[in-house]
Every structure is written in C-alpha cells, then in structure tokens.
Amino acid sequence: MTDSERQPRDAEDPLRSVRIGKRDSLEALGIDPYPYDFERTHEAGQLERRYTGLAAGAETADRVRVAGRIRAMRNSGMFIDLHDASGKIQIFCHKDFLGSEALGMVRLLDIGDLIGVEGLIRRTPRGELTLNATAVTVLAKALRPLPEKYHGLADIELRYRQRYLDLIMNPQSRDTLLRRSRVVAAMRSHLAARGYVEVETPMLHTIPGGASAKPFVTHHNALDIDLYLRIAPELHLKRLLVGGLTDKLFEINRCFRNEGLSPRHNPEFTTLELYEAYVDYTAMMKLTEELITTAAETVLGTLQIGYGGTELDLSAPWPRRSMAELVQTATGVDFLALDSAEAAREASARVGAALNGGENWGQALEAAFAARVEDTLIQPIHVTGFPRDISPLAKADRNDARLVERFETYIYGWEIANAFSELNDPQDQHERFEAQMRARAAGDEEAQLLDEDYVTALEYGLPPCGGLGIGIDRLVMLLTDSPSIRDVIAFPTLRPR
Image 1 (cartoon, one colour):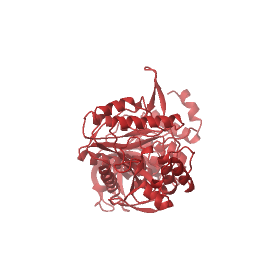
Image 2 (cartoon, rainbow, N blue to C red):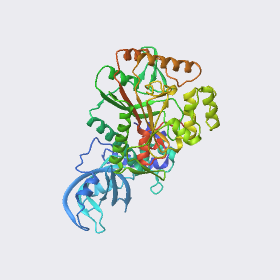
Image 3 (cartoon, rainbow, N blue to C red):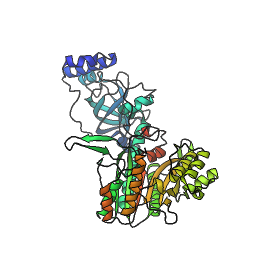
Image 4 (cartoon, rainbow, N blue to C red):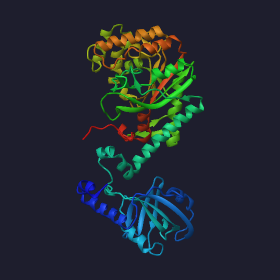
C-alpha cells in the first residue's frame, strides 16, 4: 500500500498516526514490521511451570524463545510484560544483553505490538520470572492502541462487535470461549466412546423441516431455486438411520431460525442432535443426564454450580413430571379433564396465558405451561407428556393419544434439551404433516411443511428409535455463568451500525 493510499486512514486518529510513524521508522532501519514466522521454544505458561522452583534472584544459562503481545512497558521499554495464550512473562531489555541497534528498535515498540524474544531465564530478586532479552523481533506492529489498561473494554456492545479486542483485554471472555470448546469436546468424546458415529448433513434445505420455526431464505442462481438455511438436521439424520449407515449417530453443528434476538436467542446457534435405533425416549433421558454431567465435571470439576447467584445441583437422576401435572400443581387446572380446544383456551386464558384465540387443545396447554410453570423450573427436570398437537415428529403416548412420548429438559427455567420416541409410521407422519400444513394455511408461519421425500424414506422402514437435541449455547451459558447468549458465541449477530 502506498503512502497516498494510507493517508485517509492515517489522518483519522493522531495516536494511530504516531504508530504508523514508528512503523515507517522500523522499515527505514531495514526491519520488516510484519515478518513471516518466528520459531518459539516455549510458551509463557510452560516456563512458569518449568521454573517454579527457581529461587528469587537466581539466574540460569537456559536460552529460550517466546512470542506474544506487549501488554505493559516500564522504564522506556526496559521492562515489558509479554502475554501469550498461556500466560505472561516479563522481558528485560538492557544494554548488558542487547546492542544499541536492538535497543533503538525497542524504543519504537508500543503496547499491543506482537514481538518474539530470545533470551536467558532468571528470576528477579522480587520473585518474577524474567527473560533477559538477547534478541527482539517485531512480529506485527499494532497501528491502533489497545483500550485503556485499567478500564479494559467495558462497553458491552463494543465487546461483541470487536471480539478480538474483547479477547485481548478480558481474560474472562477468553476463558468462556475456551470452556465452550471443552464442553463440545467432552460431549463428542462421550458419544464416540459409546459407539456413536459423527455425521454431517446439509445446511441448505429445499424444504425446511425438523422443527417449528421460521427459516431464512436464500436463492441458488445456477439451479434457480430458493433454498432454506436449516432450522434442524432431524429429517436428514433420520434418513441416514433408514439407510442403515449406523444404529447410533450424531451431529454437532449450526442451525438457523429467523426469529427475534434475546439474551437466550441468536439467529444462528449450535445444537447437538443424535439418534439411536431400538430405544425409546426414556433412554434419551439417561443420555441427556450423562452428557450434561460429563460436560460439567470436565469443565468445572463439580456438579454443584452457580448461575446468576442461584445454586444448581446437576446430580442425576433428575425428576420427571408431566406438563399437565406441573400446570395443575401451579394453577389447580387439570387440562387432561378438558375435552375441547375451547375449554382449554378458556382455562389457559384464566391462568394468565397470552393467546391469539385460535389455539388447539395442545397449544392452550403449552401456553399455560409457558405462562405459569416454565420460569419456576430452576433445578434440572425432565418435563414429559407433551401434547400431540405441538409434536408432529414424535410417537403417540402409549396411554393417551392426545400426548406423545417427548420430554424437554429444563434448568434455570430454560429448555436445554428436547427428545422424542421418534415417529416411524409413514401414514401417521403424513397425516401429522397435513395437519401442520392446515395450520400454516391458517396463518401459523412456524408450522412445518410437508416433506414427501421424508415420508417416502419412512415407507422403507425407520427402526424404532430415540432422538435428542441439546442446545450447546444455553448449556455453555449455564456452565460459565454467562448472562447472555452473546457472551458464549464468538461472533453473535448484531444490528448493523
């Protein structure tokens, strides 16, 4: 880039202009401010562990090479705090170890610059592990100053928009995203050890299905067709089960739903979805408990966790109670004794549910549950007995045809998991899809579309199976005590400025 091309951006910030001047001075000295590589021998955390027994004031002849970002400079660069992903080490730049040219280059460094350092390990009389620098290499000259040290990056909106700055300045943000990685790894390892095969299914669907939600629409130019970002992988995963790829399979990946934003909702989110042949939804309850407790023990080392000042006990097994039972306990209304949609709507309205007037029996029960029960489910619990009306992909309950064999797991008032005994009767499935299409025609934009190919797949035979979905983002929120889903997604969706 030429100076004339740089000038408009150079002029926008006097601090940036000073740094650009230092970059130019480095180049004038024949120093490349953006070299290709630097060979390290250690990270800061490794050195801290290796030399934990080195006495205060002791020196060594051990030569090491480290690299990282300058986070503090004292005495005109004589002392530098160098941070890498593992920790911090102090760098000592002095004429006893560095030549005059190298010291002159050090004076062109700023907080935020990335450097590589070669030197000798010692511990200062005050006990700080230090590297006596014998060579310093500029690895990336930072042209913008970091946020002020003592206040950090406090602007929540800016933290989400410039996550790279958030990660530099806020150790808690780094820890949250690293814990997320460990949660996913723990769940993947648990499933692999139990014979589950990880698979991948399409992100672009010709028919959105597998959940009740409004999809994002895009267009494929070459085929000249509209496609939908997937709202769930369910129907493709069960196609693989029909094909006999394996009896146990799972996918950890993104889903997309064209819905509003909230502290618990982001338009793109990560789920674990799995299926196992020849079991029902009760097996999924046990597996849900295993996956969540494994994640908690791996990341936190305990099943006693705190979220928002509330103590949660994740110790299994967790209670199992039906939706209708929970609603009756909270309101005194027995929805199972109501035999019409109208009666159910009236009862739901009396207990404070917000209705539009067209709800069927199951939707009225669900609305009463959402209004009076959901937020009270603080400790882990499996809610069973979901209405058939709102569960088009689940098998009917063996004792009550109005219900299905489905549960949702709640913790801290949030749905964390959703599971079924999967519907495998193609005629029943076709009828359920048709009911969804009628609801869609009546104005329900989230009702599911008829997927003829999926019904065709069922006609070749889907074995009895249990299916489970777990929301990774919400689970990570709980395990990191994060108040917003934006805290646990590296790059959340934000309104453009």
